[in-house]
Length: 225
Image (cartoon, rainbow, N blue to C red; front, side, top):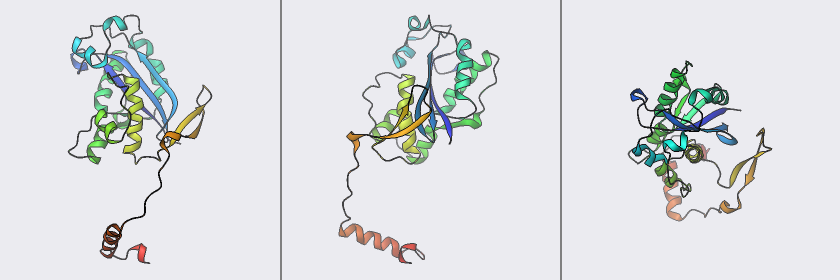
């Protein structure tokens, strides 16, 4: 089984080098690219102001965060959760940059960028020239965005987990991953009655002719052997 961590951050701004800080971390555990239900989620006191332009993006003000733990108080739990596994994020260099700046301030080793999987880069390769924001990818893959009124890290992780599956080749609609027991250990597939697969229609004559022409242009096609 392959374990990986899909994660997202919300911050006070765009650049840790100018003093911006992390205010929210959400991370989901994936086993073989499917979420297990195990998650790490925390709001963080950034020990500085939260500019209004940042609040408009994620909805948090400094008053919302004053009673929350500081990064140094949650860092060990976060590192224990992520372990040494691959880490997936949309525009991953942004999130890695902020996490590593916080780790450095705590005297911890930075995350190795060899662990980084960037779904934005994956999307650009698959859909060159098209918009590849999380919202755009959700719309492209018919993923429900109705709850996304602000950039909430936990919700963004849940949406990104569905996008990531599609970028990895997709899965049969109507299959979900259920976790038995509160500790998460055993995962089972569960059918979704609202997304039953529809039977495929037989190809029309034009489609058959196009397929035959394609096969005729191949060298020693296995279909004719």
